Image (tube, rainbow, N blue to C red; front, side):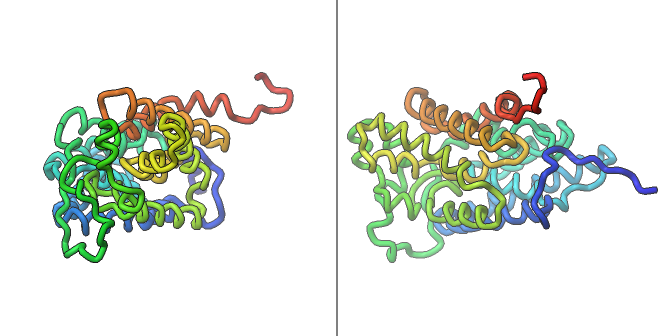
Length: 324
C-alpha cells in the first residue's frame, strides 16, 4: 500500500502544472532582466547572480543533508530565490555578502519554517531587508560598466548613469526631478540601481510571459503598480509624466511582478490578492515619500506578507449557513 503524501496549500492547480514547471517559468521570465543587468553593469553583475544562485542551492542541499530530509533542490525554488535576491542587489555588494544573504533566505526564512510552501514571508525579500540592515553596500548605486558600447541607444542613456538612482533624484525636489531620466530612458534602463530593476522593458517581457503561461494573474501586479501611479498622480498635481517616472524608477515593477505574486506568502483569494497589492502600493508610496529611505517596495511587500493570513480570513468565501 502506497503512502499518502500531503502537500502544502493551496491544493488547486491547473492541468499540467507542477512546482518545477512554475519555477522554471519564473526563471525564464527573469532572464531578460538578468541579461540586461549584466550588459549594463558588467561581469560583476554576472558574478553576483551566480554567487547568489549557487549559495542558495548549496545551502538547501546541505540543510536537507544535515536534517536527513529528502533533497528538494530539484524543484528549482532555491534557484528562483537566489536569482531574485541577486536582481535586487547593487553591484557594490561583495560576493561573500551575497552568499550570506542567500544562506539567510534559504535556511532561516525557508527551511527553518518547514521548506517550500510553509515560509510566512518571501525569502528573497526577507534576505534583502536583512542585508540592507546588515551591509550598507546593498543600498549603494550600481555603476554603469557596459560590456560593449551603448552609443547606439543615443539619448536613451541618461547622464545620471554614474550618479544617484532615478528614484533618489525624483525625491530630491524640483531640481532633482528635472535631472531625472525621462520615461524613455527609464524604459531602456541604462542608469544606476539594482541589477534587475532598471530596465522596465525587460521586466514587462517577463510579465507578459508569466501571464501567457498562466503562472500569475495580470491584475495582481497591475493593482500594485496602479495604486502607486494614482498616489503619485494625485501627489504630483495630476502630472502623468511625473507619476510614470515614479512607477518605472526603483524596484516597483520587479517587486510587483516577481514578489507580490508569490503563491505562498500572498492571499489565495482573488479579492485578497488585490487587497494585498493595494496595501503594498500605499505603503510603498508612504515610505518613498515620507520616510528617510528612498525605496519602499521590499519593506511594503514584507509587511503585507505578515498580514496575509488576516487578509485571507477577511476575503475568503463563507460556507452557506456557516459561522461568519
